[in-house]
Length: 53
Image (cartoon, rainbow, N blue to C red; front, top):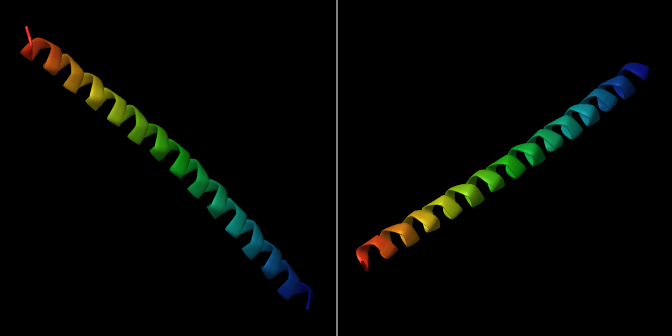
């Protein structure tokens, strides 16, 4: 019975670690997407300004 409890604890800790890692990855991905979109928009604006000269 104690072994089953230990297995449950390990599985729970693993689930928490996976969830924390996924949240970290999602956060990093969100920042990457935001920065990429921002750079793209700035590039479009620069090209538009140069095209209108």
